[in-house]
Amino acid sequence: MRIVISEFMSLDGVVQAPGGPDEDTDGGFAHGGWSHPFFDPEVVGGAFDDATARAEALLFGRRTWRTMAAAWPGRAGDPFADRMNALPKYVVSRTLRDADLTWANTTRIPGDEAVARVRELREAEGGDLLVMGSATLARTLLGEGLADELRLMVMPVLLGGGKSLFPDDGVLRTLELVSTVTSTTGVNVCTYRPAAGR
Image 1 (cartoon, rainbow, N blue to C red):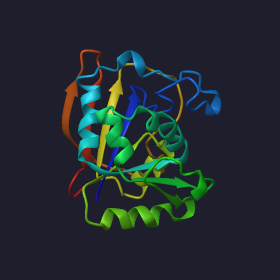
Image 2 (cartoon, one colour; image 1 turned 60 degrees about the vertical axis):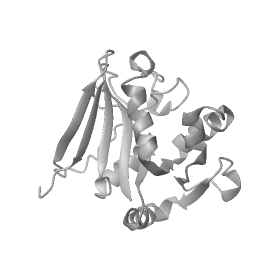
Image 3 (tube, rainbow, N blue to C red; image 1 turned 45 degrees about the vertical axis):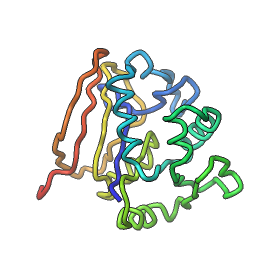
């Protein structure tokens, strides 16, 4: 399976709480919901539709899984929601128990087994394993060389601090820009893959 990481990102590299004010207030983050003014159905929405259409499974960290599990099951009848609900889902967590997995088709991956289990999934036959949000998990996957594609929706806003997607381990990682599309709201949807031989 190809591991594809899809993220809303500010121009200064912040991926924290794009969806709502109470999504993630760690560190006193006060700008939750910052992505909303820049969302457009055609380009940004189209990028999500395309990513989920190609996905054969979804992979989340605990916080993002909880947010999604609270939102999508109640939206049955919408084609995108139906796709989200039907796809197999994996959640990496040290604290969730199997009894907590109320969103259909969810499998828990214990936090201390995350890298090994994701490596096994990546080596299995299948299409895309899509990571949405889940900044801590995504940063770990990038650090371990387990991300095959980054789809970044870079929005024209500076947030002045917050959680980043990128490892800060001092390792040089060269990427290749595969495509970019710009929305009327100024969002650049950029697709990157690790550069071959670098």
